[in-house]
Amino acid sequence: MIELAQNIASYIVIESAIESGLLWLLALAFLRLFRVSSPNVRQVVFALPLVLPVALVTVFHVLDVVVPFPVDRPGPVESFISKWLVLPLPLVVVFSLAGVVGIAASLAVLVRQGLVWSGARGTWRRQRRDNSPLRYRCSAILDVLATRLGCRAPKLVLTDRGSAGSLALGWWSYIFVPRALAVRLDDEELEALLAHEIGHVVRRDGLLDCLAKVCRNLMLFNPLAHLALSRFELERELATDDLTARSGGNRLALASCLLKGYRFRARHAWVPVTRLLGGTSALESRVQRLMRDVAPLPPSTGVWLTVALFVAGVSAAFVVIL
Image 1 (tube, rainbow, N blue to C red):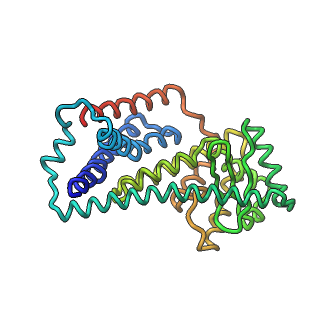
Image 2: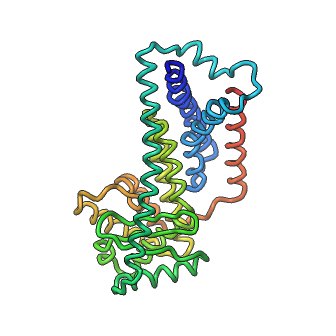
Image 3: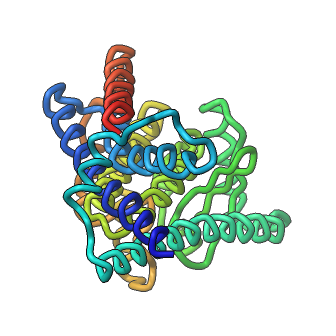
């Protein structure tokens, strides 16, 4: 039992914290060196301190129990931990509890995602026979946007609480629109709102967001994981805003929709911070970006190749040193 607690404390908490710190420094250096401005690329880079530490710890310390790796001696990181970070029993207990809490929080994210999907499916089934003017108005816009983007129209769910959002799992994709917000938007603003949410569906941001939050919760007591997730979410929103603009959406209408949504949220204090709006600083960044005249171009093949080489190089380096 003590050995299990030591493994959880060493591998899940300490080793993942060291790896995420190194990856965070590498990510900042990469963005600064290449002066990357594309939100798609920045989103991938900020995902590294979230995903890679969890993936590496899983591969080298969980799967090794089932299929032992043919390694005769530990790597430098494991040697450093075993030699210099020998924890007293009280800290072992605290850190192992932190790891257990992180695992429980990650499972809670998956359970919550399943409950949201189940609730959305049930609500849509109850509402699909609804012929209200608001539902007809939103459905007509969604059909036009889906044709423009060349995808299936997501199922529309009108809600009485919360904020606009989207959920995509395989073939089943849903868009949530609060009635109280939709009635405050004109046609261009409502189209921009739905175009933004259908952009999340096309990009499969729901699944990526769930994966990022699971990895963040596994490193729940690591502040760098929370910082990386906040930057990941901001770049995700900026990338979806750009996709909305490139697909023919009105940038000024989307900016106006964001501001109206912020006022709507301010008047309903119980509404949580959601994917559409983000925090106040994120809202300011998005509105300023949308006010520019020219929509930014998608990243070139060279940029994506640079990111792929960066990810491959970092992964290979950690495979060697671990």
